Image 1: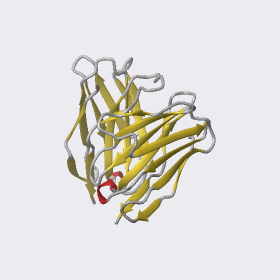
Image 2 (image 1 turned 180 degrees about the horizontal axis):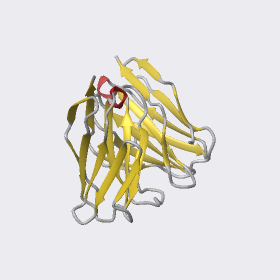
Image 3 (image 1 turned 90 degrees about the vertical axis):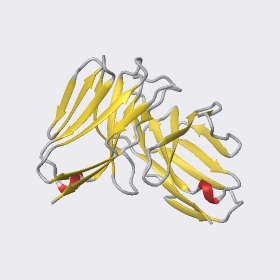
Image 4 (image 1 turned 30 degrees about the vertical axis):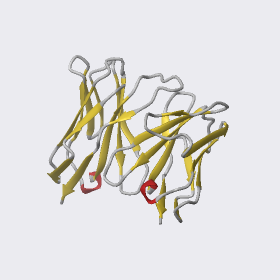
Length: 115
Length: 114
């Protein structure tokens, strides 16, 4: 099955700096890579996703890059703000997902943005 | 976006009792729902895939007789933790897949077994 590794496990940045989180996956059939933000005690919220037919996607201060050959993808947050502090999870899946296909999550990165 | 609810949001029970958690898709029909378990400071671990009208598919290492899943309608899946023990204490999160194959998460249920 799919295995997703995520690094670093914790990341502390100064407000205004950039944050980068990296993930690798094992199943070459995976073609959908979402990123979730989870605040303490809350549900994961999808913040951005990328499909394997593109190499990069941006949404305001957030960007995701994908290298299918190397099987890794990264989340970039620019101009970080204190409200960006949360746990971020990457995931991999096959899309569209027939019943039974599933998201495999990375271990999570706890991001702390210091004012 | 689509809304998924869970009930209860938290529950405290005695060891040996059973606890039922409901997951509802409020504004869409979900043929497939997923149940996850999340321990403190850890990732989401998929427990099982719940399919409407058929038996759930459990991940390796998850006891199907311990974690009973019922997906009786297109908007409701239930997870029953039977004979709960302190080691079952965790944050249980469901998600539901809509017709576009997008997955939406519920707010989670925090279970504490005394």
